[in-house]
Length: 221
Image (tube, rainbow, N blue to C red; front, side, top):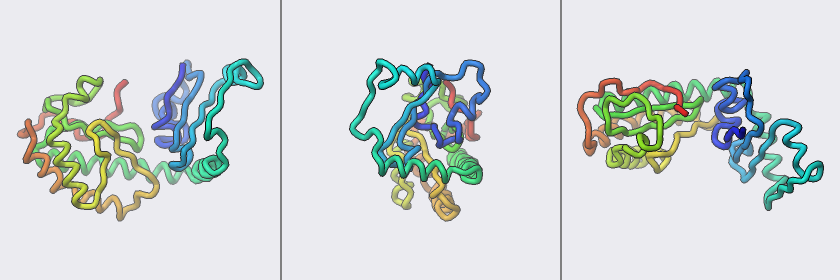
């Protein structure tokens, strides 16, 4: 079993998603994959796992693995510096920032009457502009693609006009980092009410939002 931690590894916790979901799982993955978050954004990736599985790699075993950027010294140095800086305090601040933002995004959209669902994994979260106001969780791709895209576009461009560059896709996750200090969070928060109003103006649903799911929730498998 391979656990894909390319997005979540070292971002949502020192132990990635497994550290949040079930760090004492009886059936831990055989291998883990990691991406550029472990290098502070530099082009770097890694995988690792049980000793007997890793022993299959050359030169100890018959499986050959190589890449153009394998062992790049700059990326490796950046990765080491990043991981050394990932202290418990950094993760606490990331969690607090995500708590604040998910609450403020949800409150702004709810106040404007925009149906939405916010789902979260640690400091990562997604804002779904759902077409079904009764939906409380997005559990599969079919639900994810049934979004109010005009509402998302209006929200995105209103935030961009106010200096907040969100992920430009309704299917992308919001990433927080230690660089997002209180000043940055305040700027995001100040832009939310008008952006929510812009989304409401073009929303194909609108109106009351029973069970809006505006609080943070786990991403469902």
